[in-house]
Length: 114
Image (cartoon, rainbow, N blue to C red; front, side):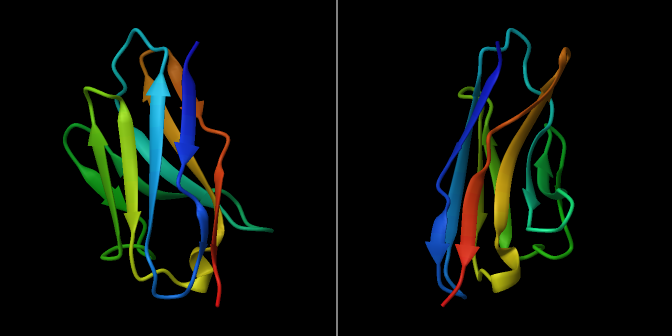
């Protein structure tokens, strides 16, 4: 059974930084895409950043501030978030997919506030 577990959320002041980490386990197939999504209150869940073996893609709103990285040997994906803004406040979800399907973590809260 595949498990996806996030960590690293919390409260940070505007302009600050946070690093989110995610570990995926239990898959006999390699993970293709790994990504971070977020959902703010009253809004739909949206893609923040996605990383494959060939590319990285960012939402326009985080381009230049966030960096996604992964360790294929450990099946982990990280999201370094710099220059955080109040509008980055949301629950952040880790996503991973393989040949059998796609999987979500339980989410971690990020709050940007003074």
